[in-house]
Length: 447
Ligand SMILES: O=C(O)Cc1cc(O)ccc1O
Ligand SMILES: [Fe+2]
Image 1: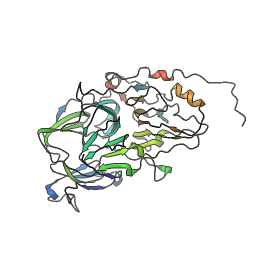
Image 2: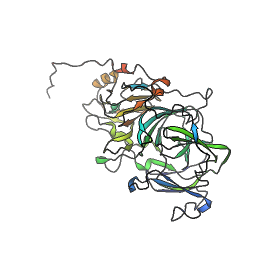
Image 3: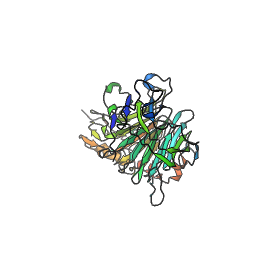
Image 4: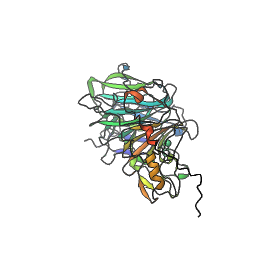
């Protein structure tokens, strides 16, 4: 297998040359009259040219043939991918989905793009405001096909032990054997192709009009949560591959898919430099902060990445994880509290159980607690934890739940409510056994 090495750091100004082509990165300028090795220079801009320096993102790609050489784009079937948030009537209920079905390859071959299903979202890619949440279920590699999202960033949370390989222009992301819980992060316009080795499923948070960034740490200090050096980007590696039968570039543009043909692999970048790159991030490297005295800290302490809105402190969407950790809080109901939130909370489970719902919420499934929709621990969890002995104990061992939390009020798609046939109609029943413990004669205990 090809040995790819990675560079580490989030938002760094990287420089990278394919080791087979020393000197392929132009020295001292971006646009030489003739590039080394006869390459073409192409800039990929991820921010307006005029963005302030800390938000300015671009990479220079030195490639064998520039991306512009392709036949015209034509509409492509979108399957269950949509940006139509008016397909069905709004539904403010607590929603929970059983694990989404992965098609069997013996029945139907489905690749990553064909296996994209939009479950909920809001806003509009055209006005550069909003988000989409998608589920991918696939069983087949993309062959001579790549995907490019013109609408926004894709934060991909892979779920399951069969680990895909992502090919990109930057170039290839492999999982190593210890990287079970991985996040992939492809920013707007970055081309990638996905190889899969069996039934594959995961979740995607798409954000239009903003990029994900590391959250500010405030009083936490200079270190903690997701550390910049744990974000990895591969060193340049090109393939010089003519594809006489045609290579297809799928472009998600204004919520619809389009396809064009070209006669070469787009993964033909020999050298590149810049700060606009894809990343992989191993969720196990997250430095967890938690309460060490009493009370339950809000889950914002578990934010891995955030896409900020223009309102201070209000995210378009946060990516939050619930990693294994110690629970030590004294005289505290330790699981999540009962909650009504001005944000929308979409949750998924990569593996294990979620502490607030030991049963029912399954890996590969999901839940959505919409704006101001009441939610919280199921009756079982409440009863157990109201009387549990509060000794230090491991919480969420061997599990990984996550949340996409958004300031948008999200609509659920027809696929989410009907077509996927995974909506758990009995979800509300997990709170039905909650009973009153109210005692009007209660007296404070004498200290
Ligand atoms: O709803 C949920 O399970 C997510 C969540 C977790 C938590 O620890 C506190 C608040 C919250 O919304
Ligand atoms: Fe919540």
